[in-house]
Amino acid sequence: MDKPYALAKSERLSSLSAVRRLFKDGASGFVYPFRYMTIVEKSAMPSVEVLFSVPKRYHKRANKRNTLRRRMKEAYRLNKASIHQHTAECDKSVDLALVYSSKEVLPFNTIENAIRKILAEVSERI
Image 1: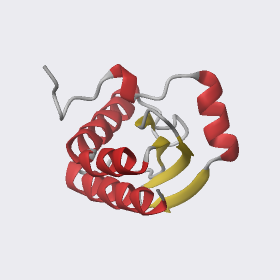
Image 2: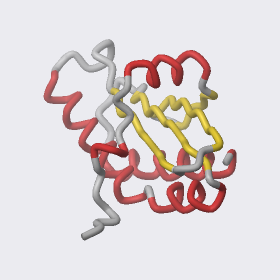
Image 3: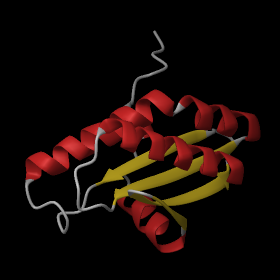
């Protein structure tokens, strides 16, 4: 049973070497309140792997970081279909890191709109 809106473990970027390479060699951009890094590669198995980060530097309390991370994951989960479709058409693999860069805890609507813009920009680069 395939769940199109699920965020499976295989869709999360967890390899330490892949994360290091992404932050070292990836193309970056900024859409308020996110800084994002991407690497797009030709691949026989098209996939999108994503990393969510909320730095302790701006949000000292873990409950705020967790809330923001949950909002980011939910916004991505609901809007990921467009980027998955582009990667499947072009036979490309995408690694994406989303880093929350605002000192304020923003509402879900703002976060979702920013993630939509980021996914559209990444889809154009594919």
